[in-house]
Image 1: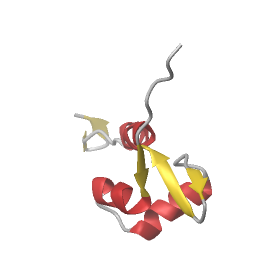
Image 2: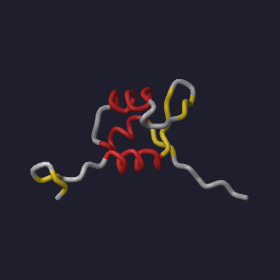
Image 3: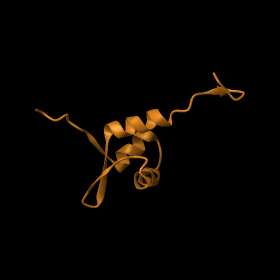
Amino acid sequence: MPLKEVKFLTVAEVASVMRVSKMTVYRLVHSGELPAVRVGRSFRVPEQAVHDYLRDAYVERTVHGRSA
């Protein structure tokens, strides 16, 4: 049975996609908010994990304390 191909991103690629600094990505990885695997001294983040994180972090626009 073939395994689903998983695409991994570097910390720099994740930072570019999320429009944040590499340090922010490292903080998310170290806090456990963003799953990653360690390859040597580097981290690799599954691309789907980035999409999941952004989806879960999505904030709906509010108008005077209520959802729009």
